[in-house]
Length: 355
View 1 (cartoon, rainbow, N blue to C red):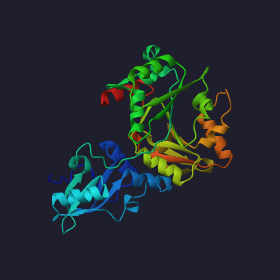
View 2 (view 1 turned 120 degrees about the vertical axis):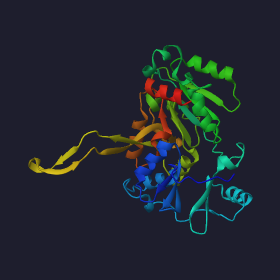
View 3 (view 1 turned 90 degrees about the vertical axis):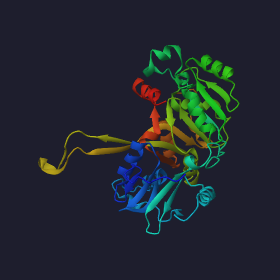
View 4 (view 1 turned 180 degrees about the vertical axis):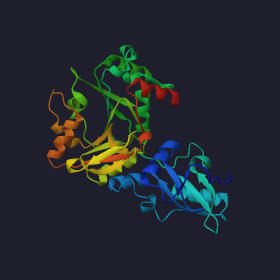
C-alpha cells in the first residue's frame, strides 16, 4: 500500500490560504478534506466539518485556515508497519492517516477507501427518522419530458431522481418515506408498487390542489411524532446527514435549513460612495458569497401545528412563524458542489453527464 507522496497534488494546501479559498479548492477537486502544509512540513488536516463549524460561528471566510485548523491530529510514524497503521485507522475511524518522519515531513498518506474493503464502513449510522419528500410538482422547467414522466421519476443513470434521494437517507438508517404527491400521482404510486424495494417503506399523502412547500404537510400532522427530514424531489445533497441531525439537536432547533455556500464573481470593478458622491471604496472584480436555501430541512413535529388546513403555505411562511414565536431556526452550511439542483434542463444535463 506504500506510495510516493506528490506534494504538487492539489489536495495539499498552505496554512495561510483563506477559508473561502480552501472551500473553493475542495469543490474544485471534489474532496471534503485537504492536507495542510507549513512550508514542506505536515501541519494539519482540514475537513469540510472544520469549515462548516467556522461558518456557523460566523468566522469571516477571508480568515486564514490557520485560525480554524485542529492542533491535535492522529498521525502515524514512518516506523509504523502497514498493519499498525491499519489498526490505528480502525481504532479512530479516520478518513485519512498521514505518515510523518522524524523531521515532521509527510512521507505517506492512506485513505480509508484505499485501505479497507468497500464493505467495511468507516461508521454505521442509524438515525431511523421519517422522511417527507415533496413530489407533487409539475416540473414545468423540465418540459416536455415532464409532460410524460413526473419529475421524481426522471432517470439518473440506472435509477430515478427520487430513488437517488431516498438511497442517501437509507444509507443513514432512514427507511420510512412519506411522499407528497399531486401531479401524475398514480404513476409514482405504480412505480413504487412495481419496484417493491425492501429498503423503502413508502406512504403517500395527496393534495387536491397545490398547497405550497409546507401546506400539504397538514395532511399527515397526526402521523409524524418524531424529528423528521423534509426534502424537495429535485435536489441531491452530498453531505453527512448525521452531522446535520447532530447540529439540529445540539442547538435545540425547531427547524434546521440546509444551506449551500454560493459564490458569485462580479466581472466589473465596483464602487462605493459617501455623501456627495465622494469615492469611499473601489473593489476590482469582487466575489460575493451567499448562503442559499437548498430545499432540505430537519423539523420537529411540534412545528406542524402552525400549518393551516387546506391553504397554500410555503415552508418559508412556517419558518417566519417559528421565528415570531421565538423558536430556534438553525442553518447548516454545505459546500456549493455538495448541492445539486436538478429541476431545470441545464443542471439536469450536468447530472446526466456526471453519472
